[in-house]
Image (cartoon, rainbow, N blue to C red; front, top):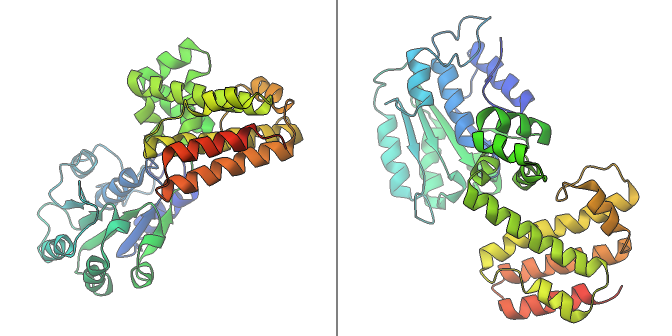
Length: 343
């Protein structure tokens, strides 16, 4: 017997839901919380399939079984009793969308015993939309299970959070991400065969999110990731070695000028500085950015810990300035000055 055998990670959480399904003690509403690419929607589908599975009464069977008609329809998004709501290309989920969904909740199932209402981007619901949903959370219609998906529960009103059970998805360990990718993706197997740490770079960039790792496994995305990593390494090399301001400035201005892309580069830049600081103290410590430990060790020997902390702080300040809509040219110049300044 296995609970959600095709879902990787969050073992304790899977066991908790498996027990609730088999003992018929499910709540009427859950909040599935986790960053983008962590598997929230997949987990929600698996809950719906497990509840509807023809083998849910068999203590020796996997749930969901994946082969009965209910499982096949739900897992392939073809069930008429599983309804999805998301913001689409809008900034928020509106009160009118939630009201339409509530009217749908009043109808009877067409195929299953339970109807499932999965609200993606739940933390993007307007306050009015959340208050409209409260009615259904407080007095749920019979035969309805509501699943809210959100990156953070902080985006939901306290009144909503208090009426749902929260399920927090955990990052998947790198070795488990690797096993899954090699099993599920031909592109991952190709990268692994090429060597040079290319697959390891994808895994590091995913931060334990299989959905993010899979998104990187296209030639275009993988090339963009490799370019980003080389840009970050160039800045760290220049900073760690005490290069001249002109050299540092060239490295820093290789960063993209688009705000979202610049922020996406600053995060691994902070992680790279963290890796070098950690390696100085503990050579075998887990790394976040570097996949070649010898490369990290060599660079860590060129800068003291205080300097690495100052560089990381400068990157955080730059990220804050980007979020505050600061001038990109000014932000990059200030970053170059901070990075090139000796501790």
